[in-house]
Image (tube, rainbow, N blue to C red; front, side, top):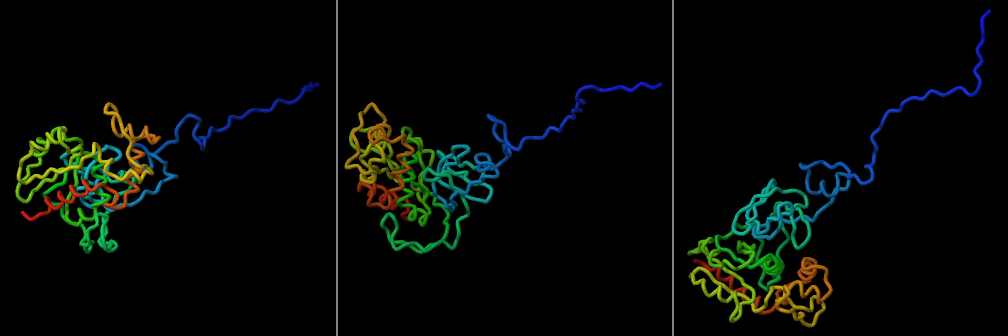
Length: 302
């Protein structure tokens, strides 16, 4: 006689292992996977699904830009689709092109090949000169215009950029004038290779005046303005100020100005100030006169 077994209670359910799936979203505290070190700047910063559009700027010779990845800063000497050559402190540096890879007037931009069919030049330029017909990009002259720092170069580009591109003159920041004599020797001025130098604070009994007096080469001209920084040569009314604030001598001038007007940092305040400059009328006459003399000197026939 066979026995029957009776199971008392609920029958246990069998458990199955479920396949592990990769989460579609990154875990908290872990960054989303990017394309890696070979990705373009816009992919590294924003991700491939949030690609950012940057302003496109024609890479004309003489335009002063900063390469974001390497901080190489200076005027453009040569441009191709793959790379841009920038003159930084007297050396030509070749850097890779990518969307948003450069900074111009404080904002990321994408450099592109200048177009030949650019809009006609206006009747007058920001410098007040009569606009000439657009002849396209010119080969840069052997002569140069050197200034103390990046802000000087950006301001000159803003006001005299059309004139300088038409004449093929490159503006190059020296990043300081302490070795002015050495900079002149390194450039090698001569007939057909003139050098114009713009200095800040060129008044009696200043360091800049002593440095300028040591330069006596016939193919070099040194000019300047009376202000301790090129910012002060801009009309303070562009920042709704009646006058530039007085800054103690033991405080860096730009830092002192920022503290007086409540600005976060010099870079932010400079972008605001430069963005409001529209023509030579916004600048002090001593700066305008000096730049005009230097351009005339560098472009004069040998």
